[in-house]
Image (cartoon, rainbow, N blue to C red):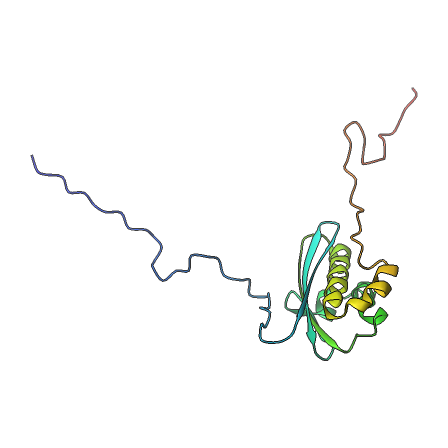
Length: 161
């Protein structure tokens, strides 16, 4: 009877393959050698990471310009609200990465993140931002649908007969 030879199983992954996943292509990697301020913002189910650094007022969201990402003027105004309130609109470049939620929730999350990042730049802005309600995490969320009903509050149509 011939002797059995054991074969070693090789992994399908080559040794040059990185062990951790790479960053998404559209996400911009923050520059470390420059002064920058960071803020995290949340609204509904959206979460935003916001970096502000001295610049000409350019805003990038997920690697795209503000006009490309948010075509709606109202959402652009929501995002720029903390900058206009503190009169720093043309002083900072903003890089934001945002995930989750819809467009309105994402705009609110970016606004919250910018407001928090501005505190890192100058803590004296806290009074103005706080009185405008820009530092408060908006707790409102979608109410769940209940069983035996058509929606969160709406009931099924009632028929007497």
